[in-house]
Image 1: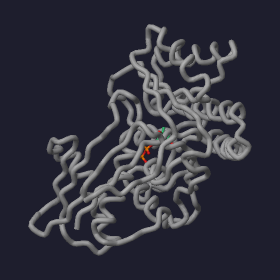
Image 2: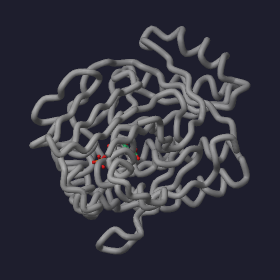
Image 3: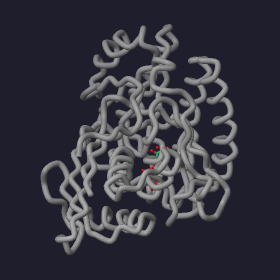
Length: 326
Ligand code: DP6
């Protein structure tokens, strides 16, 4: 009847950018991410026959109607799957600084999927759970697993072959991610809306699809060989290509601010000076920098000197979903 789950955020090295089915959250391209230890969501789901409708508390405050409706429509999918008929009380706490630029939707829907299924008494495999989480937010399917994770896009119309698989476990390759905060402004174009507009209107979108497929092959090879340089070059170029598609959209948009560019330039300059690190950016202005552990502190020292940098959060590779005491 009741279950509590912790799930961590993830950062895509090869981006998910575009859907072939909006309702089932089926992507047009496969993606690859690392799960992060530092940021996570803990969610409790309690089905209770005394409740006439679902109730959602976020960070100890009752959520508004809009937020509650999002949770309700996701719980309806879980009820359809499991045969559960009761309404639920959902309590969720995000240990994700909102300004970090890490989407809490990935950890949020992964934790909710885990708890909502478990509380019905049904046991699903991690693969099946990733398919459930996917239907709350695409990137959430990758947060079921720790370490290096691939979301295989699949080709079936019903989504039965679109799920996440673990490529390397949490301890297999120690890399670090620095989340560089340059802005705390709320994003103007949410990722869901941004990818939709890009698929529909950007003439660069076909190019993105071809490039993303090739980048995924290269990134997987780099991971198998533990080749940091190859992985770094591939992930940085993949992020740039994703952002290039938004410039061609109608109306056009961009997630970068001048402060974003300052950090990108600084990372490239430091790299020229021998400090090897690579950047990636999601649907917002903040930058994430990937490096090996031995250069992490030096990099923090250098980047914190930039005027545009407000804060730096340092992360290690994190674990998959974990069931906590109910
Ligand atoms: C740029 O998973 O937030 O972060 O499926 O519509 O909820 P929805 O989108 P979401 O998109 C993430 C986009 C991205 C790239 C990525 O994480 O792969």
